[in-house]
Each structure stands twice: as structure tokens, then as C-alpha cells.
Amino acid sequence: AGKGGKFTFKCHACGKPGHKKADCPEKEKAEQAAGSSHRRKKGKAHAAETKDGANDDVSFVSVAQEANSVETHGKFRWVLDSGASEHMVGEKGLLVNVRRMESPTVINVAKAGVTLEGRYVGDVKMKADIGTRTLNCTV
Image (cartoon, rainbow, N blue to C red):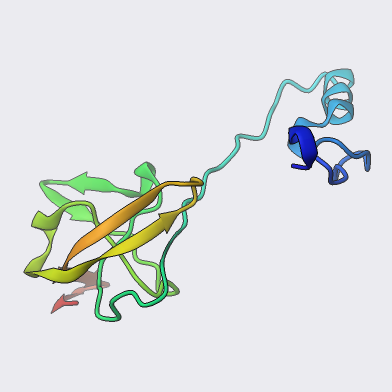
């Protein structure tokens, strides 16, 4: 947003400045004229990063959406992101070999001005069912 909180970029739907595509009045009019009551549901994404100098040995697991975090028969189903450089979990009880970090790691999240602190590091015991085989490991 520019001065006075006004959006200064051009809309990707109509090309006019002052609003974004999601808020485009022209797009809204076109949908109403077409009789379209169907709206695309807005998705949400979450991102977190640690500040420079963070502990390199931090190992957590992160779940991005509530829908991805399913508890099954008292066990959690984890969603792993092989592209993530660091992982986190909000329940210390899900970790083994838990150790308190010498200094907390500050984690910046997508919401402006909000940070989290990582205070513990640990391992996760996992069981992966791969076809007819089961793999037990600690990561």
C-alpha cells in the first residue's frame, strides 16, 4: 500500500490502479452478470523462517494446515516437506531425546510483527508404511 494506505499497484484483472484482483469491482460485476454464484475459496499458506545465526541443529516438524494434521488412533499423521530447511511441532511430548537450546531461536511467521520462539530441540520417532513394508526410524 502507498501513502494513506491506498493500494498503488495495478489490478491483474482490469488493469486499473488502486486495488488488487481479489477486490476488483469489475471482476465482481462480470461474475454477477454471468450469474455466477460460484466463488473460488481462498486458500491459506503459512511460512516461517528463523533469523540469521539460528541454531543449525534445530530439527522440528511443521504442519501447515489444520486439515493436514490428523490424529489417527492416538497417533499423529505427519506432513513432511522435503524442501523445508527447518521443521517444527507445537507439542514437546511428540519429540524424543529432547534438549533445551542454549538460547531460543526466534521464528518469524507470515503475520507481520508476530514471532515465535523455539526453545527445545529433539528427534521424532517415525514409522513409515511403504507398500507392504514398514520402516521404523528416528529423525
